[in-house]
Image (cartoon, rainbow, N blue to C red; front, side, top):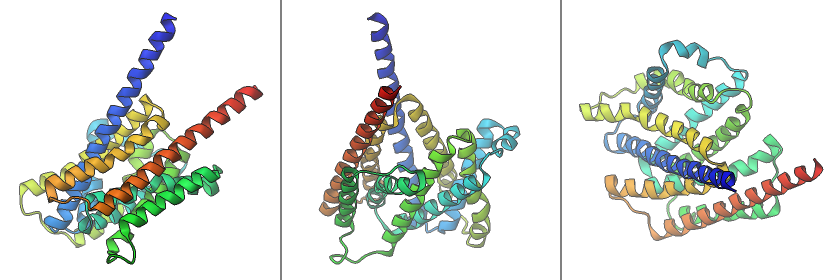
Amino acid sequence: MQRAAHGSVGQGTNTLKGIGLMCLALVLFSCLDTIAKYMASVAQLPVSQVTWLRFVSQFFLIVLVMGAMSVPTLLITRKLKHQLLRSLLMLGSTVCNFIALRHLRLDQTQTIYFLTPFTVALLAGPYLGEWVGWRRMLAIIVGFAGILVVVRPGYMTFHPAMAYAFVSMLCYAVFLLLTRYLSDFDPPEVTLFYSLVAGALLMAPFALADWVWPSSPWIWAMLISMGFWGGVGHYLLILAYRQAPASTLAPFIYLGLITHTTAGYLVFNQLPDAWAYVGASIVVASGIYLLHRERVTALQRAKAQAAKS
C-alpha cells in the first residue's frame, strides 16, 4: 500500500508539472504572436522580414544552447523528405499566421487555430489509418460550426486574412501529423532543428529584398526575441508531454484563448465581440468532447488488447 501511494503521488506531481509547463508554453506562444502582430501592424515591417528573423533567431538560439559542433548531428535523419516537407509546412503556417495577425485580433486567429485537433482527427484516417467514429465526427462538425459563428459569413465582411488563418491552421494540422509520424524515426532534437531549415533558407532572399531597417533598438530586441519565445515554447511543450499524457494536457490548449485575449487587450486594446465568445465556447466544448471520445476509444483498445493477451 505504501509503494502504491508513493507511486500515485509521484504520478500526480509529474502531471501537475506537465500542466504547468503546458500553460507556460502557451504564454510564450502568446508573446510570439503578439510581437509578430506588433511588428507587422504597428511597426509596419514586411511579413517576410519578420518571418525570416523568427526562424534565424531560433536557429542561433539552438546553436548557442547545443553548441556549433552539434549541428552536423542534428542533420542526420532517417526520413529526409518527410522532414523537409514538415519544415515547409512550418514555414507556410508561420507566414500565413503572421499575415493574418496583421489584420485580425489575436483571439480570432487563436480560435481558428482551435480547429487543428478536428482537422488532425479527419486527416488521421487517410494518412495514418486512424478513422473517427460517428460521435467524434459529430464533434468535428459542431466545432466547424463554432468557427462559422466567429466568422459569420454573409452577416459581416469576410476579411481575406481569415483565409490566411485557415491555411495556416491546415498547414499546422498536417505538420502535427508528420510530427507524430517522424517520432518513430528521428529524435525530437533533430525534428525540432529541421523545423527551422525552410524558414531560415527559403525566406532569406524575400526578407532581404523587402528589408526595412527597424526604427529603434527596442524593435530589434523584439524581433530577435521571437526565436526565444518560439524555441523555448516548443521545448517546454516537449517537456510537458514527457511529464503527462497527451490526453491530460490536450484540454489545456484552450487556455491559449485566454492568454491571446489578454495580450490583445493589454497591447492593442482589443477585446472579442459577443459572437467571438459564443463561437469560441462552441469550439472549446466540442474539442473537449472530441478529446474525451479519443480517450474512451484508447481505453477500449487497451482493454481489448489485454483480453487477447
